[in-house]
Image 1 (tube, helix red, strand yellow):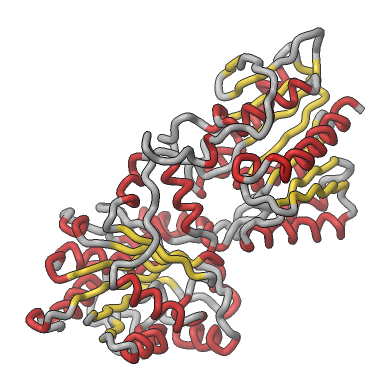
Image 2 (cartoon, rainbow, N blue to C red):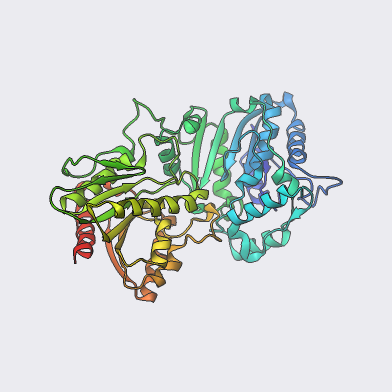
Length: 506
């Protein structure tokens, strides 16, 4: 027997759990949606409302469960709701059998929920208000067309979205600004993460982060941590309540996917697997955050600069410019008589795109300044999450940029990234690319979320008559160079390389 205590995210009351709670009860469980003070109409605020207020609301729900009944408590926190869930579980750790993180981040001690607000521009505005001493007041709920700023609405019907908007309540600022305080007791409680893939994150992407070797993520590989995926947007209790209830029941029983720990006994992670064919073993020439691979012979020569994706944890070792894929591409370019260069940038978090763009621009200038390089014949080649960094080059292509290439790129911010107000939207920029040749390597088995950004880019390029060359890898996955059979990927990679070279020397 399990008792599910359900805590909703920003602007939403206990009503969002009605269908999911009903299915949990029908399956033999017990379910209680916690009305949060100052947000839920059932619990109006009589005084200041902060995160501590909501922690006390959840503690009261835990204490209402008869400890002698033998029923195990499962706390479920969605979005902001994970903050009061963790605060309450830390003080009642002996009463809680499991915590479910429902499409949310991993709050840390001393950090306010403000840090998890997905919209970066709104987060900055709220931080400014807090810095000015504004601790009271509320944050207005989204209008009908504004919910995407808080997460993907994929799967929510029109009527359900209208009801969500009609019942939405202002969020007390104190709940977002007050830091979460944890003693550490909550660390002993088993946890399950439920990832909503249409919101941009899945188990594979979390595994890749673990594979980078960041010690901060090692806790995700403990036996008491499990994961599930739901192919829906950020509000599964509205878009697929049956599936969510089933996942919660399975999570309560301890089921779920376990992540593989990084280390000597683990299989070689995808980003460290060998490049799919032999290339000349040219030495690297390191200049600041750039490595150059220069072919023998007279110069100066054209150059292609390879830009890795991300985010990549700052503690990842080896760094991206030493990964076999980037080194392999750079040496492959050198085999074609072109200088290959890899640039490492500081895209360690979604909020780092501005800084990463500056790093790439500085790295390109290092390459152009090298006397072995023809500064007027440069190509840029982007990968994965680095695709957003194509924006500036598409919008204002300099005369020396002869070609821009991208392999399995992300070409629009994913909903969970909260970048709707940022400038990093390649699909909006491609109309200004003019005569710049763009070579796009498209993975046929790309994740639906990223594939959607690619299709939007292709459509925008078609409408603007941009010089787009599409090269498909029909059975290729994201990161196909090291994931898929060479006979499936090499022809497309070779065609793309030769196309880029032709634009550099033509």
